[in-house]
Length: 323
Image: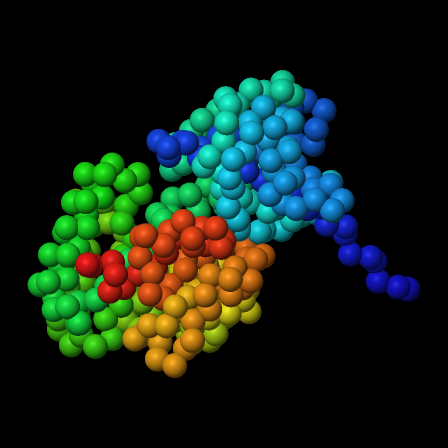
């Protein structure tokens, strides 16, 4: 007997429409459709020969009366429903013309990205809500190079600046200090752990350091070597991984990572001899990645727009984060 044919995959463009105040648009599926009454991000199926960006613009106009002025690729994720297997091409939409109107009779709602309280949510919409809690920049510590005191002052300035600007997500910091003596590392970790209790700071710890550190704060960040060796997801809240190619991104997803970094995009002192992917190379590697990916390597916040256009969730920085 021949093996059953694999299910047909339906490609769907999905819009994560974000207002300047951080609210995201979600809609309720209308009567007559599968999962009627469930909430989801708006979008629809690709037509033959249609690009994802064009399909999303068409669907948002037909369903909501919005004219999309710009959208950027984000994450591509498959999901098997009882009635269909879909491949969801999520794109973030920050620029559009018009006000959303429910042209299909569906309910619409704007909700803060970190506090979406409608229910029930379509299963494939749950993971993106978690991704929206990740900030656009990911800072990597540099205490051994700057000096511990200088690093902590720079961290304080960064937190002050984010609060003054009304940032809606905590600063995401990876503690990565392979050259810091053990006693100084432990003392620094203790201060960061205490700081996150009173300031908008989320700390994940490099797998170069004891995993007990990661379990005591917000999560763990795996080196590429530790990612390759991992056989099951560590029991931490947030899990990130360092990657250098699309195959490693697939491994990060298979392990259950919440996000990854990919680079170097540009040559850096931290990656001697690596020519850098460039944003075109970065875009090719993340073209169908199922988790959010930060672009890493010689980048800072001024590169955010170019990084997002290439499919990045945001940018990761070490030295540039503390200028």
